Image (cartoon, rainbow, N blue to C red; front, side):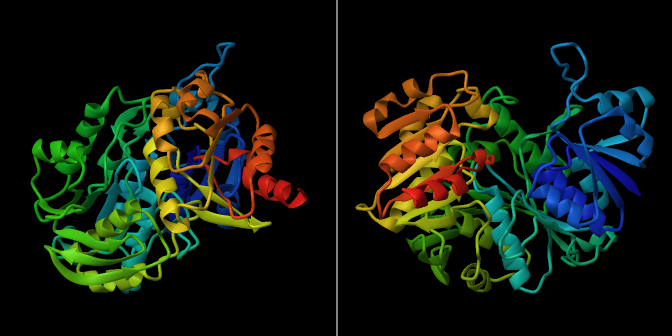
Length: 470
């Protein structure tokens, strides 16, 4: 078929496009500010990209328009539609579908789906699990909201699909690992994306309040997580973090599948040792050992979740641990961008206060108490822009010696929110000022972590250049 994707440059929709192209469909798409790296990846696949959402694209007459959740019925100040193509699709009665639903019907059908959900660590854990299954010779398909360095691509189909309904139950269906996001599906489908995936193995990694733009409170997100659990068959497995009270509440609402817990002393899967070098315990007994380059308790928990999920499809913890020893992480997860004059610069995707804290805590474990950590961050997610979690920022930055906040686009006072940190925190309204602040403070031996879920104005390259010129 010919599909035309609205909002194609987002990580999820770009992954859908790549999978559709690999499956032999004709794929075109549009977005505003068609941008790399996704634009480069898509063009390399032979996918035509169109700038903007003009009504002239209706003339493409695809078999179906696939709608990303960036698209809405919003109006501009002058009253014109923000997405005129969507209005034209509706007026014409043209066929349209959400990205998650198209994926479920055209890619996931006939597969054993392993879905990784949680507020934090979805991309990393999904990448870990895909790599474990690949290392075990299972050739999984996957869709990740990032680029796993072991694969170099964010999505692939994997082995051929069995269309026999009973194949998944018998364990013979091809495997597909997917990052299962709780964000809503589309402007016309306000359910979380993950309810479309119908996993046989579901990982619930953690659960905190997030996405304040669409959820009123934590209970509303817990309800969506329970909707996910309702779709897991009785022969399936729910892998759950036993340390999270919110997930305990979700399970107590009802669960009809096998449960495998991880994280605490009495879990089915636990760990003994430092996060970079630890024994894997299964019901208290050592069954494997992980020694790798990653740090932080959060990554240790991610590993346990991936090991428990892989075991459900027949991969032993020992083989999974061996695979993790060769895991290369994900692009933009504590990615080393360069070292200049003894100052090291990292890029990290952290944007929620808990993610900021775990990233910095993990680095502190690696560099020790004497090295200085400088944290540069921008509150860019919808939740952070609303200021819902601004009071948590001083707590999230405790492990940093100095913190620098990019305040462009905020309607709340970042300097006031960071006041408890005193002279350890500075704010800047533009990237150039932020870089000037960082270069004035950085010393040989320092570690600078730039944290954002966006491009952060290209700060990484600019900062390395500025440090080299001092």
